[in-house]
Image (cartoon, rainbow, N blue to C red; front, side, top):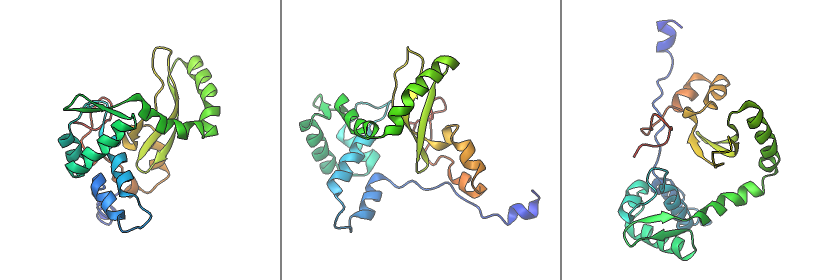
Length: 194
């Protein structure tokens, strides 16, 4: 590609990721949209591998949802058995996995693929996964690893995974530029820093 053709390409800045509160606010004019449910889900998503115990202020900062609303969401999650508190910090309980299990158990492809992934993992002595794209992120719905590792469901930024390669090969270059991170990521795991 020469300099002239490069100058004709539109410059693409990384996509701006709106906070959960801003995404929720954009939908509040819809009479069928449940703001409280959306806020509750945003509170659940605020918890990460590295920050499993969070204060109301930390969750409010991460989501940009007002503290009072965060407190009500956490109160409800605790009453329903999805979260717990030590009086200062909050954390999710294993029951929250039932939310994802409902999807996995109703998706025949993931259930059917699991024995195939297990056999392939055994033969290759490597982890094998099945995933689907969720916007600019990859959602792993089935995984088989060595017996010492746990099987998990993860949502990872697409740019940190092998899924980015075939996606970029089949899309215009401008699309792939937008897949670059807009949030600092941990160099080891690809997870959000912080």
